[in-house]
Amino acid sequence: MLKIRILAAILCAVFVLGSFAGCGKAPVIVAGYDLTNYTYSHYLDENGFFEGVKATDYVTLPEYKGVSVPESVIVADEETVQNKLDEIISQYDVYERLTDGVIKDGDTVNIDYVGSVDGVEFPGGSTNGGGTYVTIGVTNYIDDFLEQLIGHKPGENFDIEVTFPENYGQTNLNGKDAVFNITVNFIQGGIREERLNEIILANYGFANVEELTADIEKWAVNKQKTAFFNELIRKSELKGELPQSVLDYIICADLVFYKTYADKAEMDLELFLLGYENVPSVETLLASKSEYYKESALFCLAIQAIAELEGLSASEEAVLDSDIAPYLESYGMPYLKQYVIQTEVVPDFIINNAVIN
Image 1 (cartoon, rainbow, N blue to C red):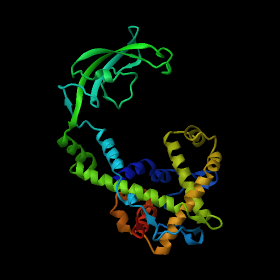
Image 2: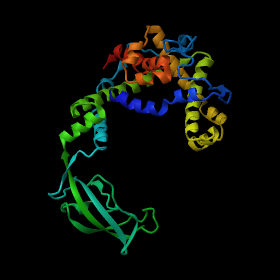
Image 3: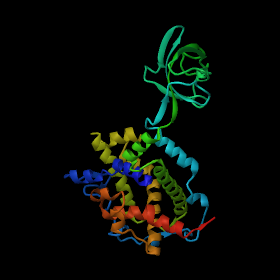
Image 4: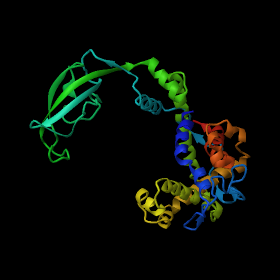
């Protein structure tokens, strides 16, 4: 599903721990945390649970069986689906280029322009022949710039006159009258279905736009379910103190993330943190994210507690048959099982046992 494909892109960016853990022979100690041999499966047992931790001893769960779920959670939001489809399509050249006809309000047009004030071109006022897409009545340009395109045809070259706002933000342009020489390259027509289907097959593995849309709908529903699930799990409460091993697991994972990227940038960790998080030291980072670490630990424990109570688990087959299977060597089976439990097994259990209204 699209969800997994998008996730995979994220995993490619974040799942770099294997190289970090395997390349350092000298001890790696950061703020007292030993990261030398750390892996994301560290602290986890073979089932993907926190090793030696009975989560139900630490968490008071909200009512999670028979909860009321709005139908909107399990039905794809049409606007979300269309926006995602439009976002995907917009990345590719799949529209017809019309070189005849007249520009109308609402048309999307590809134009070039060169702007001048008092006969002198100004920086940033030209497309430099690269062409740009504008939609009449939608794209936000100064004055009535775009409305003056209406009635013209592809291939035409003409001037338009506009006035910059007094508060435009550039002293040399504020309130100034300007002339833009316009060249209309083409009017954007309808989608070339054959070309679109070729792109969809090559880049997403679906035969046509209908199959891609169906996949986006699944992605949208999963996104909606995840939002509902996360809100429910956040109602969990901690009994006493968090297990130190769980808190260490969360903190070490975060430190490894920063250390890995600092190493890739060939930067000292604290210099990297100063630029990336605007904090002067690792200790400051840990202090600033203290509540985040605790909330993350509680969140993970709450999901594990439900899995314990309901006898839920993720099989090796479920991991190997999923799109996250390529990360097995770097992250280990326990971590991937935990991931599947957190993102699929427990959320699906709650939705399947809910009352839809």
